[in-house]
Image: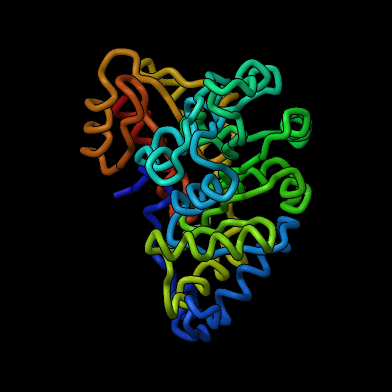
Length: 338
């Protein structure tokens, strides 16, 4: 089967497994795992942040960031398509006692003007605006990413209203490869950052929160409260390190393949797709006659797995284990069966 459901379905490679097997390890709850310590320092330096905290998932790193930046009764401004709003089990309200204010941006991206309309006054009856959370790239927005100019303008709004700025960078690696800006340039605008190693990069597990040393020191205890304290987890850090060295350069190929599949879909009278909106490795397209579920089933019958992303919307996500042969078969399947 050609699995295009997500870039989380990748399997560890022989090289990755070898790196994991030979990773030096210690007890990370005691701060003694050398592989984790080295990875935290490396990624923090990449993004120009003071410190990092390795955690099991992107949801945890997002929620730890929200918790670190807010107090109960505060509000987080974000896009209605954001991962924090849609896919984190209402954790912000439960774990941090904060409210989410979802705005309808474009392709999952906010603008300074839109954010300005959402900033609250400081009346006793208002939730207090405290954080602006951006997602880069956007999942439900089809892999769209922010330019540095767009982020700079939003940072100026945050500073104007004394707000924090958080980055959900689950697929930030795709944005870095496609945009051309550096991790350091991007990171300079944010108070907290979440990055993920198990999506586009293809590690089996792991994300990281980046911020100041003081914030990370406090958050280590919060991580422990949430059950995220791991012991000899250097084997996981070694996998993440391996992906940075070996898989990051391959992301541009994923973007190229997504565009080629979009071009094939555009030639079919069964689908509607905007080729210009295929920015990175995520491809969203709509069915014209059948439901998304029906068409996903038909693709599966032909050996291609996709995700239902709405009543008429389908998602395909490319990753480094989708070969050129897989892509060619997918294009031929679209041509011959749709």
